[in-house]
Image 1 (spheres, rainbow, N blue to C red):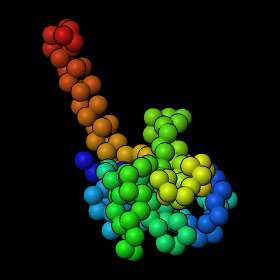
Image 2: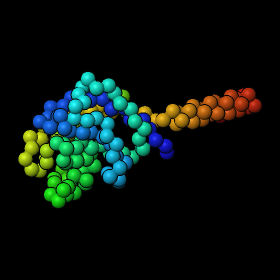
Image 3: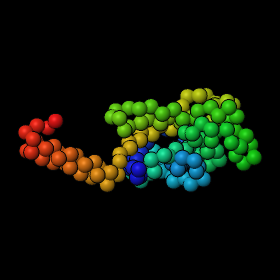
Image 4: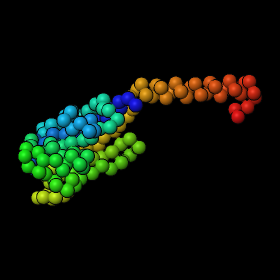
Length: 162
């Protein structure tokens, strides 16, 4: 299936690193290909930002211009700059489904959960709304119209939908 659109909105940020934290997304399985959404100076007054994303993507928080924390737990197990971080691969991001089926609240911890941390997950919160690309909606609508046409045609020929 094709790309979708993800709209990101900063909900809050309470972190010692809030002026240097960076948030973005990457293609799942390819964390080297990152797209930055928000920078340290951004805050809750920053307008929503919408990006075209592939269906399988992950989220990251770059804390203090040094350490990347990922929504994919296994990536938090990898050494960065020669130092092993989060050796247990513990979650650095908690993801909650909110509102509609396509809205999520992502809460990041900006320190190593297995090391020195407060485990508060209030260091960066972002609301994400995911919607299919307009082409996908158009195909869905075209299919629905075709099914309706076929059903009406069958009724005209047989007098019944079944």
